[in-house]
Length: 271
Image (cartoon, rainbow, N blue to C red; front, side, top):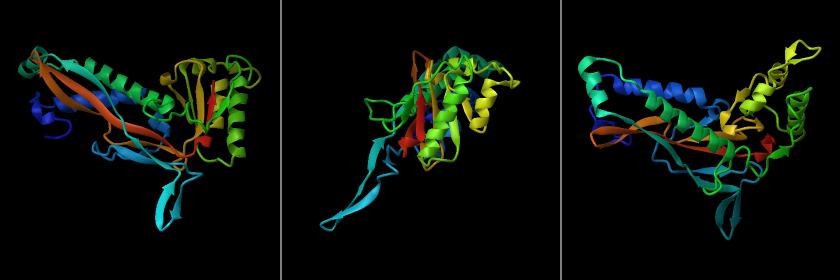
């Protein structure tokens, strides 16, 4: 039996393809982290852990003829999931009449799973020992000014980029902002004829992302190139068949992912 157990159920012709299409479209509307993080994988569902190197400290050490690696740790790749149910009678109706099946539940499950992915990328998970963009110990923390007035957002982001440059960190700068901060930049800057968000966008060459997973009042700037960070994917987001309960069919949107930060100094957090 395969990992997704799809062979355990006989669905109307083409329904799996419709479910997959629905899940992918819903996830794409929500996901932001993997839009700027390089993808490492997919490695397969069977890969349960991965090495995370500290780019500044990883090296081989030899002692008494034994060679070990310092600056490296191994972290488990967690599985994220969200379940949904399709009623048996609805499936029978679709098969007998050819009417399209309402897959809103699949769409909501994919959205919820995608939001869990982004929250893991931005906040990590302390209990599991997983670091997020905003919780990285080596990240630079900057108290932001009021982004709803003046040139504060532009000035803050420029300061963040200046800090990264002073650390010798160049490359692709990506900026993720919470919805409220994103809307605060939707205003004309007097004397420029430009929206504040357009000015900020030029600083990061258009790499600006609205991330609802950040909640409110938060933004994170990072040098998102692969030498600094990436996103490890074991099993990419897909739908599995779970079980049949009281005739109705239960499905699971599942993925295994882990954000990997090799150079935490490449992160600036505004809060």
